[in-house]
Every structure is written in C-alpha cells, then in structure tokens.
Length: 317
Image (cartoon, rainbow, N blue to C red; front, side, top):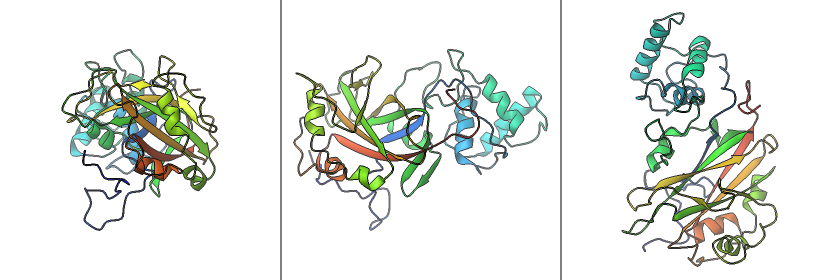
C-alpha cells in the first residue's frame, strides 16, 4: 500500500504547482435529481444552442438519449447534437424544422415522449443506464463526465432542494475483486447556514459509529448527522456488482434534500468499506475535523453542496 497520509490534495491532471484541490469537493461524490420524476422539468424560456446553458442542456440530454441512444449527457453541444435536434424536429413536425436549437416546443415534445423501459419519464435517469442494463452502476468516467451540477461556486456544487441521488464511487486496491454486495457505503449528511461551521464539525465519534454498523450493537447516530438508508432500511448501501481494482464503481443513494433551507450548505460524508475491510484502517492522525478525517482515514471522502429552489415545475409535487 503506497498511499500517503495526510492525503495529498494536488490534482495529477493539472500542471505542477497548480493550487491544491479542496478537501470538501471529492470527485468521488456527485449529486443529481432522483428519478423517475413525478413531473418533468420546465423549459426555462431561453433557447438552448451551442452549449450556452449547460445544466439545461444536460437535463434535455438525459431525456433525449432515451430516443437517440448515441447522445452522451455531458452538457456540451456538438455537431452530432445539432444534427439530432434538427432530425427530431423534422420527424415530429415541430415548427422551424431546420432549426438547430432547443426551444419550448422541442423541449415539451422530448419530455413527453422520452420514456425509460418502465414507461416513466427518462429525464434525470442515471446517464449510464438504459433498457438493456437498467441497474448498471456508474463508472469513474460516468461520474466525471455525465453528472452536471446546476452551477459551481468556489468549488461548491449548487443543487436543488428536492429528492436527490448521491453517487459515491468505490475504489479497490487488490487483485482479488470484492464480490457483489460485498462493498458498501455509509453516507452521512448534515446541513447548516455556515460552511465553515460544517467543516469544523468534530468527527471523532464517526469512526467508532460506522464500525459499529458492521457487527455487534449499532451505536446511536451521532448528534446532528443524518444517515441515508439503503432500500432494505439498513445504513449499508451495497454495491450490486463485483468491485475490481481496474473498474471503480458507484453506489447510488437517494437523499431527500427538500427540507433544507434555501442557500444552506450540506456536508456529505461517505465512508466506504467491504466484507474484507470493515473500516479497519487506523486513522493516521487526529479526526477532530472534516479535513482531518478525510485526509487521515482512507475510508472517508466529503463534498459540500448548497441548495436552492428549483424554478418552474417541481419534480416531486
């Protein structure tokens, strides 16, 4: 094991000497709207073309790919995207058939007709799933390229106050894969008006808490924290496929953020383990703050997001 502690925060994809990445913006944790939605999102009144509105374009692409599977929902415009938009307008008899833009008429048509394998709206469905692989877990490249935030300010993702899905990427450091359902995530979260206060949270009690969840008598949830439960009602959100060293995979966890106050920050803290390694690593230093925890303990990662009201249609009225 060649890991270094405290974990270096330099991004190897950037030039030498570039500023370190913030410890509270782990790329292994991303947030997107939960699917299926009860009501499809509204067109925001501004035509989309040439990637001028990235989040709205990404939203459209998550639906459009259920009609045209070659679409990659990355929030980026391409010549192929323009060709498909023009083709769909002609096929559906939408006004201005030669236009290479997404307007209200095209948006409404796609939201109504882009359905997944269950007949539910395809919009916001996990971008790596389709009718052939409806339960496929995301990969590292999926999380990096096909989950787009509303906006990013000072390394903090902005998300909407609604039911959401948190995808947590799991890595493995052994030539022997972990069997399906053997790797798992405990996702804790808390909210507050002050980002600094959240990041200053004493995390000393979190290590014994998560360890207690894998055997013996579970400890009470530490004050101020929420635990996102799996579909079976347990705090261990399990990966449904094998986890191999060369293929990191994501666990998708639903979290309801609708009760968080507008503008408040949410601290998402993911702790990852497996039947082979039940949070057994000993922290290499103090864990008295979020930064200390995620840099001194290899099981933990953190992301801070801020929440805002969704304009127009509410997805879950």
